[in-house]
Image (cartoon, rainbow, N blue to C red; front, side, top):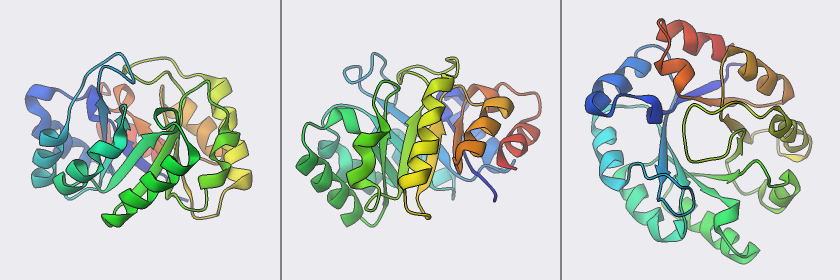
Length: 215
């Protein structure tokens, strides 16, 4: 099965963002991964709603928006209205199971896909109550907050567990230190979507880099 490849624009040249988005679009990317960081949930600050709105005007690819932020419920409507096609929030940013259920329902109310993500130290078991109602699970194989980190192989083991207990149509996405070698490991464990930033954008042959992850 072909894997969904979602290049992370965190590794793009922000001075030439339109060029770099079209570069991956024209070379086989399936989605565009947008890392939103608030300086609170993670120690870095990246981009927000205006950039997503601008990206929507220049690409037909689905915008895969990863909210690494506190209080994600406050930002669902602005990001959905800006053009996000997928909104993924962090399990660790929400403080009760009822709030998680409410947030999933809210995201779906805008007619977009909902993802839930876990950090490296979070057990995959916490996701069990939500696997039937989300569209995607995002397994972080680095600590969220910065690009270019090294792949944490023990985190990839979570993919196997999720694959065993999840519905067949669930998208299992992996983000962090993904390259041809680590991507292969993740796919063997059951992942069907890969996020890669540095590996794609720093490659001398972007098309080849994307293809190496896809098949």
